[in-house]
Length: 279
Image (cartoon, rainbow, N blue to C red; front, side, top):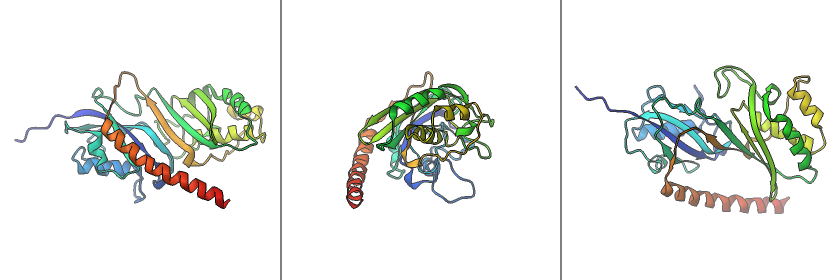
């Protein structure tokens, strides 16, 4: 009788550029490319997991189409004791990468055990944007709020078992860097398109299209309004925090990732100048 292999719990930090993918999560009955689909394919080829269910797989978040990540976290059981980020990267496309690994307790769940998540949005600066007004308006979001006006719920929603639209926003930081307004939002959890709708609302206040009272009315549910979300290409899942989980970074994998990203940086910086010249 073949001896059953011992499995251990593994957590991975992965990053990706979401431009070429239809979101993070695998879409049933669809052949559209997703981050999760590419990751599963790589893990199966390496005999790391057989399927989602038997591996007790979980992911910290489900980013939308076109959204990027610096520190997405996934967890699963595996009987492969020699798993490394660089090994996984050998089977992944260049715009998805793993760079850190942890071996948490057996019941660890990347989604449920997350203490907080942080997103960063890169908003192209326009001369009519008043950052002081944006900062003042952002303070209204801090604390436990019903964010139904700043979300788009569909079916079995994002990141939670229930359909509650109440979330705790811990902080919003707004600063300017080069040609961009940088907006960092940390919360206990996020609803679908929540960050992008908050960014749109803050942009409208900064442009003097709306004021703080409009934000207050939306948060207090005295007003119901459909807010157009900011474009997905400016959004990055920056960090997911856990208690007592130590990730070990693969320095070789990180160096190779940086080399690849620098090539992309040269390409896109050049294209930005070309387009600017054309404009």
